[in-house]
Image (cartoon, rainbow, N blue to C red; front, side, top):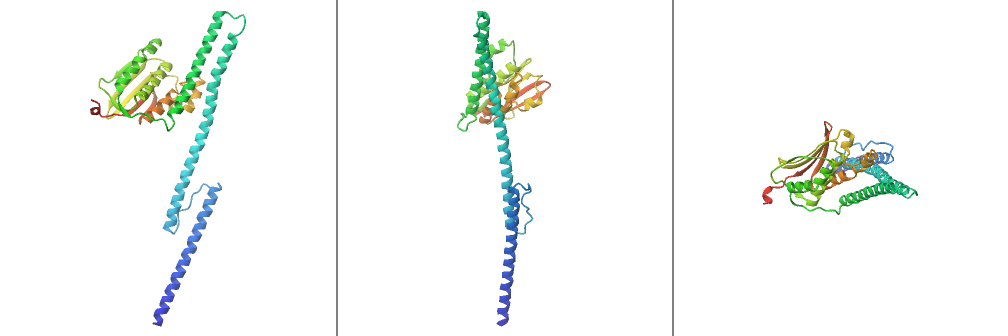
Length: 309
């Protein structure tokens, strides 16, 4: 009996020693983790927590903390990029609004001079009026884009015959093509093409793409609408020998708009509006430059034709 008691006491002592040793080891590991986190938070190191820990639970904790660090770094990077883009946008907006305002004021001041021929005064006022309309258009685009990108701006989700919408928009652009002496090359499927989206938004996308092509094309314009493998594809292609790969890569970025405007070939915010509307409709828009030809491609998932008798 005495032997059993001694054995039990020894066992309890060993267990106590083991628990104390483990507790001390855990405490040491925790201090080590705290020290590493302190160095990281004080920007003394970019090294994350060492995961060579003897306790699996602590190791899992370290893994989750490291994930949190990665998330923090990613969010901080996004915030920094957004702040930089926001500052650039404000500078761009200031430039794009100030330039036409200065121009309008200058032409009006010249028109107000005495002893100026009536014909010349009329020409100056006509130029000022034209610049004022451009300024109004730019302000409207800024407002429209801000509304579209807000979370409260919702589009309808309904069946749309995109072929009919395309033809209707093309007809409305007939006079504008004629004014520029252009005859667009059309390749539009003979079959009805259906998508789910918002009719007004789809028409707005086409209007902006056609207007952009007419304004900046250096030659013919090609417009195609096809459906293949469950994807509806609208493509607007035009000659654009002066475009660079960098400009094409960033042409949907509203923060890049003012750089283009300084060259006198600003697309305004029309393409940024196209991108936002396409994303709202669950589609996508891309651009590519090949053999000095710009292709802007909009893609939607095809809707089953049997839903639209």
